[in-house]
Length: 208
Length: 274
Image (cartoon, rainbow over all chains, first blue to last red; front, side):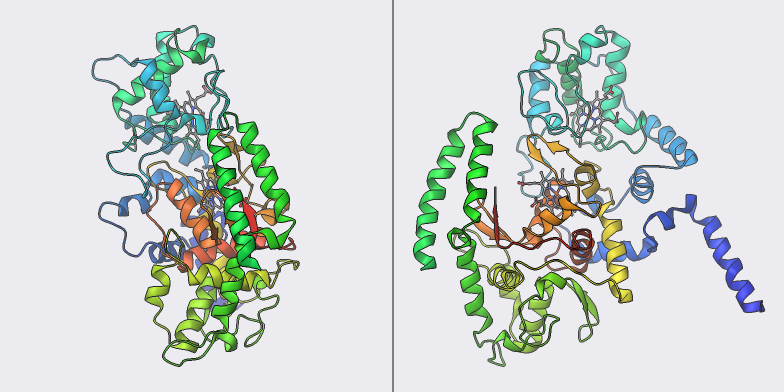
């Protein structure tokens, strides 16, 4: 083996060692910088305020590279980071009005480049979850939430955990496919309270 | 003859969409969709064949500063050869030293072969009320000339390999206020959003083949013929991303990834969909 080749081998080993969790290999063998360059070229001049939609935060970055299967260390890091960022309601009450929560669950608009900034905005929970029995138009990307509060005996601690889940799904399950509604400031505190009530109010159709 | 058929279609679709609007159940909508699907078995009754006709007329029309037609444009099979070209796109073009999808290649030929100002063409990239799209028409024409063939894209050139790998990475890239990637909605079998079925496009097989082999397509809900560029634009809209640049290399990379997953799949276009 000649010296140059040894040096080459050593630097390959070094690169493998410093690339976190072998994420480079998991990204299909293309360097993240190359992907970034293509992304830049795909959104050359985003409208004011939209660049943040394109850029990834650390959690999105790790979940993308690991295809939602973070290493043990990354899992722990995401959990800690996302947990620390959860903001609970100042008044300690996580339950709003279930009737308003139903709207949050039903509405699928808001935040698209085709939407008006002042138009209705919802969590589109029904896109992914079965909720009230009477609503037949529900998606299956997430588990059924039918009888959610009833199954949990309407316990206060369960309602608090659910508020947290909706505020930041990844503070409970890193790389969950569910959006981080509160963390990403997509839904307001009131909307999260209302949809938590939709799941937890005994009078809500979810529990009927 | 196509024009006459188109009129019939417009009336039918108008009645059809009125029926769809008033139907109370998703069931009725599904039946309507089935009815439209049955109609595509008669290709001459599909309004997208009007785009095919217009596309053919555009293909042979001399224009641009050089006042020539696109008939010497090389889509990969040799100058002017349209048959079978779509089945092999996107791929690497030596003259451009880039991997191009059909839409990028058409724009390239308009500029280099015809000396056409493509700004106006790009402005009209998606048709709408009062807007006719040269690109949609040309794509309909060129793609239709591969109808009945099977997808077979190449990954032999290093730039094709790079584009494929980037396309795959972009497919799994999560971003924006919903933390979505394409994989959120298209990486498991048998999933749906509301009642809308979601094809699993993350692996080779029937779902990717049936999906890719049916674009470009006439969208009944939009009353327009649409191309893959429009579909990706629409999916990025749902992802709460800004509108991606038309005919950008990132969209071509994604399209190459999706088309490779559809390798061997039958092309039956232009199709007709919801």
